[in-house]
Image (cartoon, rainbow, N blue to C red):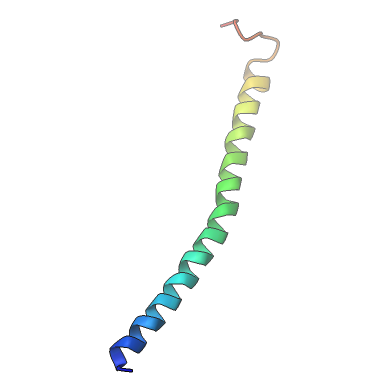
Length: 57
């Protein structure tokens, strides 16, 4: 095997590790972002619009 083929195999393995780590890390960040958006929406609905129905301005 030439040196170039060995480099290609090493690069592929490193790429798989980086992508796998990014996906694992990214899921909890996505969940945290969704939770913050939901908390904000509920805070607006029940905080600023307290006592009002959906049709009330």
